[in-house]
Amino acid sequence: MKISIVTNAFNQGRFLRRCMESVLSQNDVDIEYIVVDPGSTDSTPKILAEYEAREDHRIRVIREPDDGPADGLNKGFAVATGDWFIYLNADDFLLPGGLKA
Image 1 (cartoon, helix red, strand yellow):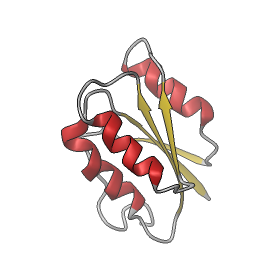
Image 2 (image 1 turned 90 degrees about the vertical axis):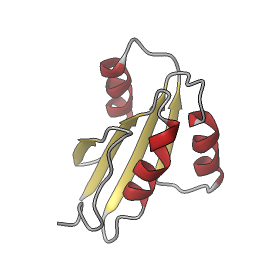
Image 3 (image 1 turned 90 degrees about the horizontal axis):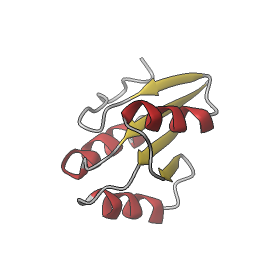
């Protein structure tokens, strides 16, 4: 079973790293992590570039303008390939083992 997680990240740099680490540190689950950034002007683009440089096949970043949070989520879910879809706010995080449970 694959879980697709979508996070809107517009100007969420101060929270984004904790959120992304909480997703990527989940063990024993097949995940796809899609982060949508419609044009942030804070540290978000730099943080996303750092994660992309890791070449982690689980991460996909969508960088294109949108018409607000709902549109951004729709863009993320439109490319999701999982059996289950989860929306995780950039200022939220998953507990260790949360997805497996």
